[in-house]
Image (cartoon, rainbow, N blue to C red; front, side, top):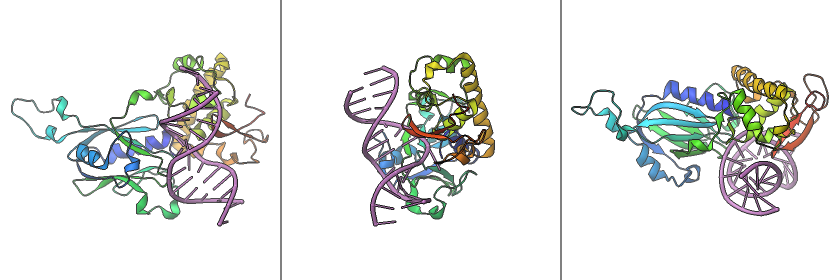
Length: 281
DNA sequence: CCGGATGTTCACCT
DNA sequence: GAGGTGAACATCCG
């Protein structure tokens, strides 16, 4: 599930429910879930006493800004609200991977449940921060491909798909000979689009996902740019990456919802891809 | 029960 | 260096 839209739901949930709450402790029972050398002890030490002050997102990456307890202690001679370097805590980077969800006080955002049959399995709670008010922010992730890290390198990700302009898209397309779907899924170029969103975007823009990125003409570039925007907006309203029009037909033997032609199924950019050979050219 | 597939990312190879 | 391949994981489905 987790592509940009699900990450945004999680971000909004955190923004709504976790800002201003202070971390009393961390449960990181799965060291494998911590990346870039982070250890259970290390994350416990770094986050205890910190307060979440902002929830950001870049592509699929969640970024929680914190400030340390020092900011809560008023010191003489320093005006209230002034920012000092040592007030800033680590940035908590959460990645949902294939099956991760964020739970606040045990509740997720309103998107559909994956592995619902066993959703309460406590072993799936790979990472939890406990707040000093008794609540919590947890990552539940059956497949364990999500990740937690501190101060993630935000520059490894390209422009967020929701911020992308036509001019940026043009310039990026011109530099890649990869199949345009591989191009669009490359998080270092444009961040946020995954397998399902890409198939829907190409279906809506009537472009074959196998086309070399640089082969798109001006009109196709405009269509692709529009489809990214409308797909994100429309599927966002509907409830997530899996609510696309193509989704119902996205299985072996499926037919194009627009013109009824049998869909092609192939691997493009390393991922299973469905498209209509009649109207996507 | 087995094989194949599943929303992502990363290391590694050409 | 760009682009492709397979691995990491745990579960689900036929």
